[in-house]
Length: 196
Image 1 (cartoon, rainbow, N blue to C red):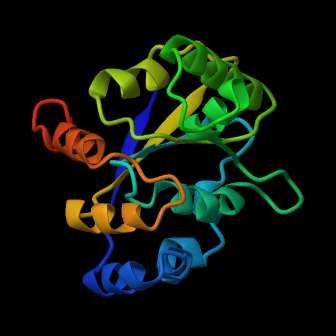
Image 2 (image 1 turned 90 degrees about the vertical axis):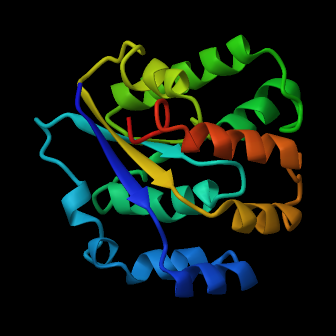
């Protein structure tokens, strides 16, 4: 199983404009040359492994915005867009409220089920969750049995902690600051961070 990693470090002009208006992330991404080509390099021949995407970053780092921008670029015209799977949406689905943490095993089982169904249908997935711990990433990229070959691409959002804390204040459902700090520290760990 192939695993690739892409760091998404936005230039300072994009971060400063995002601090003013987070929706401009879509505009910043659209201006990047690899997305300007309508994602043609992201599509694969039918015989190639399906490319699925793992978003990595502390809460309020821009993962959900990236997922919304990336999803339509990952499929051919007329095909359904990539399926964005969010652990927050799964919590909403299971417990009626995205803020309810609930038993992780139930969330994980539902996430795995959704991934397996999408892959079986040939639909790429974008998994929108922190993936701050190496074991969490490996559970999906290497431990989950899938019905066809998958090539995982990790998108590590290297949003500065101060920016995430600022964006978090604008969220409808802010994440507790210690949680953001803990996830940022886990991602910065040189032994278990995404660079490993």
